[in-house]
Length: 120
Image 1 (cartoon, rainbow, N blue to C red):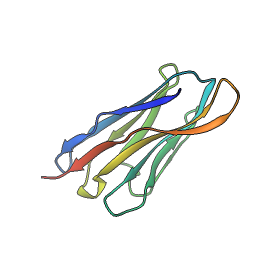
Image 2 (cartoon, rainbow, N blue to C red):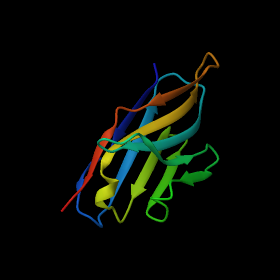
Image 3 (cartoon, rainbow, N blue to C red):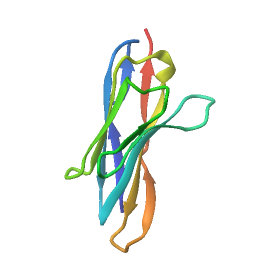
Image 4 (cartoon, helix red, strand yellow):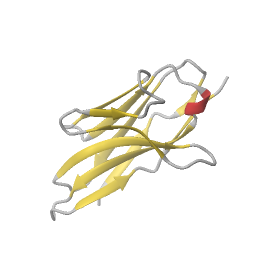
């Protein structure tokens, strides 16, 4: 059973920073794209950033220049460094991973979510 466990959320003042982590565990053959999504109250879930196994990244326009996604393939972990946080970044952040199982099935997994609140 594959699990994605997020950590690092919390309350921060505008202009502050947070670092989110998401570790994958369980039986798997490989992990392809990993990413972060977020969902604010009353809004749909939206893409924040993704990263391929080779390190190619993609960002939502709203976070470019402020957020940085990275991954450690050996640790099966993806990170999101969030700087210059704004109140509009407040949301539940979800980790996402495209995983190939030991039975050679490709399945997308989601973490349970971690709350990020930006407020003074």
